[in-house]
Amino acid sequence: MNDTIKYRILEIIPGFLVWATFIGAFTLSFIKPLWAIYFIIAFDLYWLLRILYMMIYMLTSWFRHKKDLKVDWWHKLQNYNEKNWQDYHHLIFLPTYQEPLDVVDHTFASICNSKYDLKKIIIVLAGEKRDKKNFLEISEKIKNKYQDKISKLLITLHEVAEDELPGKGSNIHYAGKQAKKYIDELVLPYEKVIVSSFDVDTRPHEQYFAYLTYNYLNHKDPTKTSFQPVAIYNNNIWQSNPIVRVVASSTTFWLLTDLSRSERLFTFSSHSMSFKALVDIGFWDKTIVTEDSRIFLQCLVHYDGNYEVTPLYIPLFMNTVDVGQFKKSIVNQYKQMRRWAWGVEHFPWMVWHFWGKNGNKKIPFLKKMYYLWNQTEGVYSWATAPLIILMVGRLPLWLATENDKATASFQNAPNMLASLMTLAMTGLIVTAVVYTLMLPSKPKHLPLRSYLVMILQWLMVPFTLILFGSVPATDAQTRLMLGGKFRLGFWVSEKKN
Image (cartoon, rainbow, N blue to C red; front, side, top):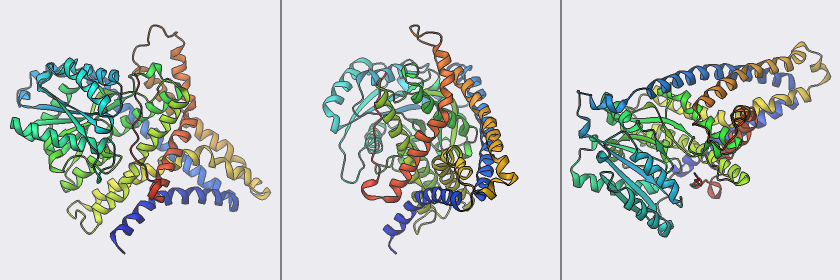
């Protein structure tokens, strides 16, 4: 069996597991509905316990987030005596494709409003030749407005090669190599250059770079870690429709949960790392959709398992995918979730690079299994759990025979399921409260009842978990399973302030 066939088999496994679960649950509901009821109750109980302990982690991160926001990290960094922070530079990548000027401008303005020495900041504005006319017009205006405020503004124009997938990964792969030439000209030590890969709508908190630098200087081995901040989709939150708000904010709460479990963390969306590590692994993967999380795995394999993700509790603010048109915004939200769910492409890559013929044998077996399990179980649960709990869970009750209906288990099942769902609502209430506390100030033109809408919108969670959770995750894993023309390319989410 050649390597191509072996890799295809690995790509089929995640989607096969998802569909085997759905078919198995439906089949069991018809053949042995009582057994299916037992399974659903056990499954619901497991997820109730999981929700409760996830709430603990989320609140832990939330309180740490609130605590760290109160610190003047810029003042603290300036009084830091163990290392000279002025020896370090920040290199920020902003890849863009067809984004409007106001989105790019707001990001530059936010960076330039940071409480930090802007002469230690280098920004790479990375455009695509496919969008040459629009990009050159925008980059010229940005250059005239901001180049004198920072150390250097590099402008790159990427042309997609035959061995590349059009998208963010190939764009910043090229931009990274161009930035390396400039870093080499300055003769800056790679380990003293801190890289941040931002989506173009990313607006860092004013203390972000001071906070990041402080954590970088205090880390025992800063070249062997990535830094993952809190992503909060607040830039246009008051202008977004309730469905989009709930889905975007759910991502923030998922990330808050994982920040307290750093051993589970992968890099996600906008993140930071050492330029030395980036050069060592040959920059971001230019052939995939999910380069933001793959970069961590590349480092993990390259450094023989001696690589980690360090949580940062100060936020980066980003846009939701709402563009002012309800239908288009809903479609955009679905496509964004499907793109994120395409992270399932890491499963075959991990197996291949952990245990393949050229896999890294130096990584401890238990570490390999831990990361593989977290990745596999995560994408599997993403696709299956909401549908099983909220829809399939009722099927055996409808299909039960008269003999089954006479049993005590069957008669108690509806009450047990209802009780479990009621208890699970505790997590929803906590989330709604925390979400409200994280909101930016309400625009003056909006009525006070807008806050009520912000709270009541969380009642849509069962709906959003299925439509923007299970469905796109199943879609992505099915596409990977089928391969060929069904494979997902990079989709650029439309940005609007």
